[in-house]
Every structure is written in C-alpha cells, then in structure tokens.
Image (cartoon, rainbow over the protein chains, first blue to last red):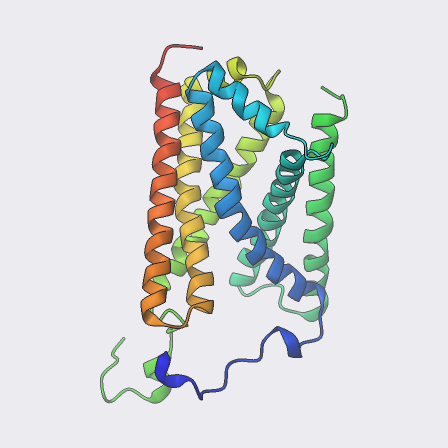
Length: 136
Length: 131
C-alpha cells in the first residue's frame, strides 16, 4: 500500500453525522478487541489459577478483590467485560442478520442498533444485580 | 473465477478488501461467532447455576466432562475468533506490508500461546485428582 499514498481514503469518522448504527459498529470493534485481550487473558489466568492449587487460587481471588483507594478496580474491569460480552454478542447477532441482507432499511437498522445497546446494559445490570445483590 | 489479463478492472478487484484476500477468513469469523453464541451463553448460565463460586465447586465443575469439554471448545473457538477479529483491525489500520506481517505474527503467537496456557490448565483440572 506504500505506493498508493495519494489515493483518496474512504470518508472516515469525522465527516459522518453520528447515529446509533455508527455507535454500535464502533462498539462492536472496541468490545471485540477488549474481549480478545482482557477477556481471554483473564479467562486463561482464571483457569491457570484454578488448576494450580488453593494457594494460587487465593492469590487470584485477592487480585479480584483488589481495591485502589476503596475503588474495586478488578470488579469494575469484570463488569466492563460482561457488558462488552453482551454488547458484542447482541451486535454480533445484528451483523449476522445483516450479512443475510436483512435489516438495512433505515428505521429497522436504527431500531436494532438501539436495542443492542439497551439489551447489553439490561443484561449486564441483571447479571451483576443477581451476583452481588444478595439473591444468592 | 479467472483473474487473467482479459478480466475487466472491476473483475480484477472484486472480492479483494484491504487484506487483498480473505473470503474464507470472513466465513470462518461468522461460523466461530455462531459457535461462541452457544459457548458464551453456556459459560454465563453455568456460572449462574453453580451453588457457589469457590475453588472447590469450580474445580469439580471443570473436572467433569460436561464442564471440561465445552470449556475447551470455548478456549479454542474463542482464541480463533479473537485472532480473526483482531486481524481485521490490523488490516484496516496498519498499511505497511512489513509492519502488518509483524503485527499479525505477534497476535498469532499471543492467541496460540494464550490458548495453550488455558488448555494446559484445563487439562490439569480435568485429568487431575478431584479437588
């Protein structure tokens, strides 16, 4: 691509008016990258700690409960990752529908984009309310 | 599809995105995403259904085939899907052939290495003595 420097690039973020579909498209990419590195990284770390005996697992649990000036950093990361998981899952379903050629009409497309965001927030809130809210 | 001299300009570029190839890559990404739809839902549901989330309960869960097999699939398919997905980002934003190769190679090593660590840990839980 080095010899094509003068070729015009396709119009990018700055010139479009923001809309839900655009937000969801970018969220899909951002959450995907986050899940790839942080999500799979923590999954591997968790499995390794689990396999390495009770001392190692105690260290993992201590890391999860780590607080920075009473702010539970790792818990916030985990909540963020579950939100990223639900957002990526829902917008992934939306992309699969669009791959089939469906849901390109402006109204439908916008509605489904908004629904993925609402859905991911509701699912994340519900999951953590269940885990932390004393239902268990 | 022929891409010889006789092809029209449109015929020569059709199907070539910023990566210059990749129909198979595109399809793999979709197929793994469908698998992860099930495996991801399985992980969340299983964790919610476990009576406790301490080391003993979790180890027993992954010691049994019903836990170990889906988890192994989740690790393998998850790493493949992550690699395929992050490659799209690299292909979009890294324009130089050399740096793109370096990035994609590093990410391949990271995905395979991370997956190997997770699978080794899982095997140790699944084939080890019950906790």
